[in-house]
Length: 608
Image (cartoon, rainbow, N blue to C red):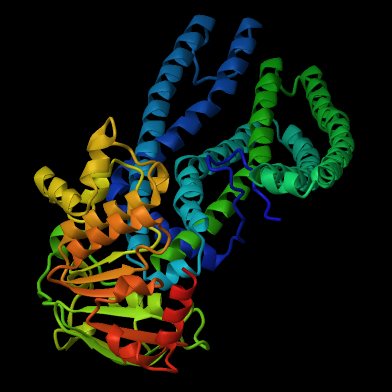
């Protein structure tokens, strides 16, 4: 069963895979970082303010140590005022400076990251919608959506937080060690003997605990999947009296979740014990050694406190690096997946509306010349073999045949979703390659069997056929498509929201909206891909009337299962296993005694 990845680090709830950090993967990140170029001045200023803010942050332990020593009548810093009031005043001035610097640092980093990320999202989306159909046939929509959402969100986190935080922690780490060494080389040496060992052990232990947590998370996701599947298929569960089976399956899974969680709790308890004993014990030892140095007058009490604060900076910086490095690894992996899309070869379709205007008009003459085709994802399976036919402008050509014979594939080839391995598709005597994709698709319309409507209003869905259409043109198209009457019967009329994929409308209503959309487009060539096959008799009659109106004066390629709808076609092509085995009018084909068309026609009419 598919498991769901959960991760609080991104809004989509998808656990992102990590990539190894090496020269090649860093080059991928560098390519995405090139999107920072238009904003480089602001980015450099943000980096400078980050550096300045980190340095100012390192000054505060010095102020606190100076205050303690001054209160005890000692003055160990010649570059600071020698009074408590003077030190406090300077400290507040520095604090105000850091507040201003931090504000602009955060503002500029976010501004640069958001703008550059918007550019990356734009280019990725533009590339996606111009990729060929074969790309989408090999990938899931959820996967592609995660590229734009989860993957780019991880890149965003890296640009806005991870890189800045890594630089900041690096400055605090190096600066802290330098200032600590200035205070006491002996204490630094003692601390660096103890701290790295404890941190390495803590990181390794933490990874082990994280692995156990991931196991529990995966098993919990599996139990959630069981609940989801059961509720989706509750009718089947009840029909087959399998409630006990599902209950047992769920119970076994959640018991495994509990066992893994208890195992993790044991190791977390051991980890906490280690932290309490070793980490705090180590810190206590270093502080104790510092107290000895204070008693021997090698350092002051204020310097010891200052050293302890710098040690906290050091420990915090070292402790944050594993998580920051893990985020960087996720960003590297995310950048690779995004760059895969950007590197794909797209279709020659412009994303600017003014570049997609028709430059070569098609009258409607269509010809297949010895077309052979196999889908790129299955090159060994030939779908069409030596297919040849002609359709003159204004003719109705029907294509019939058993399921899987290649009928819908021919529609995809006309729309140039795919291209034949050999042979040619010809429009008005010129090969399709002589036209731009925009010219062909702007003058070819399709009414499919399963109509997809967008989640907006009825008006917006019809207008999708011609975005520049006026309200009057849309209403006229709806009337011609037998859709105006049912649309105006809705309380909100044309402003009725159809719901996701048009779920609020019946099949016949969706078909008529699709026909209205095609009428508005006013194509030279029309493809009807089994447009009435799933409708009831009344809906079929209304849709068929609308289709007759749609087919007037234009070349129509009718893919049909119901042979009763194509009797008036000028030409009928009978397709079997990718080959045209019969061709003619209904009257001609029905006379062929051993013909497939006569056989299919007999089956349909006998069943009625």
